[in-house]
Amino acid sequence: LATRYETYDGSSGKLSPKLAIRWDATETLALRGSWGRGYRAPSVYTTRGAQAAQPSVLDRDSYVFVNTLTSGNPDLEPETSEHVTLGAIWKPLRGLELTVDAWRFDYSNLVIKEAPQPIIDQAAADDAAGLSGTEAQKRITRSSSGSISMVQLYFINASSIETSGLDLSARYSRPLLDGTVSASATWTLVDQYDIRVDGRGPSVSGVGSTNLNTLGRSLPENRGEFGVSWQNHRHSLTGLVHYTSGYNNDRAGITDTTIASQTTADIYYGYNVSDTL
Image (cartoon, rainbow, N blue to C red; front, side, top):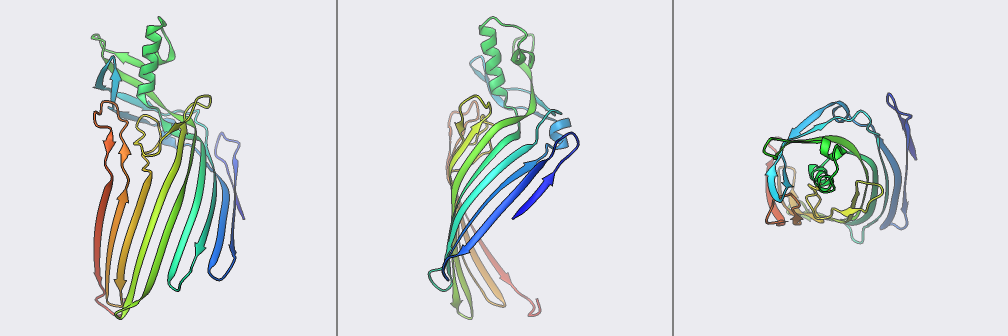
């Protein structure tokens, strides 16, 4: 059981408690779980800084690169989070360990950078409605030819992100040839990544997407790593295979919206030149 109280100038402070428990049900089976809350103040960069970029956007039925300036927002609220995990560790054989952990994280008031496309779309809708001087229209600057020359953005507090998934792992080791051979496998499945920018609006699923238009982070649905290694007091040899599932590319102006899965492999060899190391 732990707790922490944090505050900074201009805030009322937050209490961040945490509770974790483990029960060794048998000699081979252990159950564990945790619950906690987190708190993070906005950085100086997001409250006072600025960032320039030139993303691709859709404007008047054409894809163009547009200048954007994201300015700091001194009225940002601190980010808060809550997490719950439940898991088990099973050792059915000597040298073999299997683990499974289910997790869920709920984030509120996340500090993120605004996306330009919703502002451009809202300004176009305001134009079509015959409005003038709206918030969206004021944040878009056009040249004499009518093309967009600048979009003003801000760092904002997103309403919430809710994510959950499953972590699986297996490890096995045994003596072999005057050394120890080990094999391992880890796998992460993300089954929920719901992003809600407007607390009154619907959530958008960001699982398996680059999330360039949803204000979330790029997140594959599946990731895994598989490894085999052997080592003794002098030599070590390790082989690893990494897998990341494919993405849906939601960047504006892209004709091929798929990003294929990726598999990479690494091989490491080490030699200990001294028995004293």
